[in-house]
Every structure is written in structure tokens, then in C-alpha cells.
Image (cartoon, rainbow, N blue to C red; front, side, top):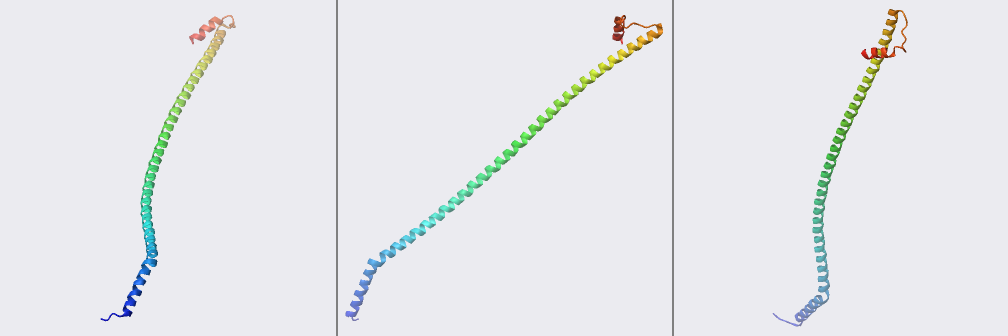
Length: 156
């Protein structure tokens, strides 16, 4: 093999090209590649962080939903209890009112019976006086015999 000046010049030109590329082209190219790799790594990390946050948010939403359902069930139970208590109180109040009305009606009936008995006594006493008057064929003075008439009324 014959090493001549052309081969040496080509080797020198290739060496200059490698030196120029290593000195001026390679560092900015490597910085661009490193920057792009860093951006890709940051994007992947952000994507993983987003997935974790999404899973955490879904878990919080499930917990909140469960909590809301339990609170709703508690509110419904409280409402049912309040309704039941209100109905029981209304029934008790209605029964008390009915008992009071019945007692008032019984008292009124007793008063009416007493009035009817008193009217009946008065009518019987008047009839007795009228009958005695007819029997005796003279008039009986009610003022004069008030004590006698009162005794007759009490006996009736």
C-alpha cells in the first residue's frame, strides 16, 4: 500500500472535520438532545404525577360520595324519627283533646239531666198543688206553704 500525500491530506482534512464537529457542532447538538431528554422526562414525570393525582381525586370523590350517602341516610332516618315522634305527639294530643271533649260533654249531660230533674220536680210539685187544690176545692197559697212545697220537691 502506497501512502502518499493525498491520503495524508484526506486524513488531515478528516481530522480537521472531526475536530471542528467535536468543537462547534457536537456540544450544541448534545445540549439540545439533553434538553429534549429532560423535557421528555419531566413530561413523563408530570404524566405519572397526574395519574397519581387522578387516582387520589377518584378516591376522595368515592369517599365524599360514601360520606354524602351516609349523611343522606342519616337525614332520612332523622326525618322518619321526627315524623314518627310528631305523629305520636299528635295522636297523644288528639286523644287528650277527645278525652277533654268527652268529659265536657258528660258534664254538660249531667247538668242537663239535673236541670231536667229540677224542671220535672217543679212540674210534679205544681201538679201536686193543682191536684191538692182540686181535691180540697180551694186554692192553696204557694207563699204560705213554701216550706211544705220545698219538702215535697226534695222528696220527689
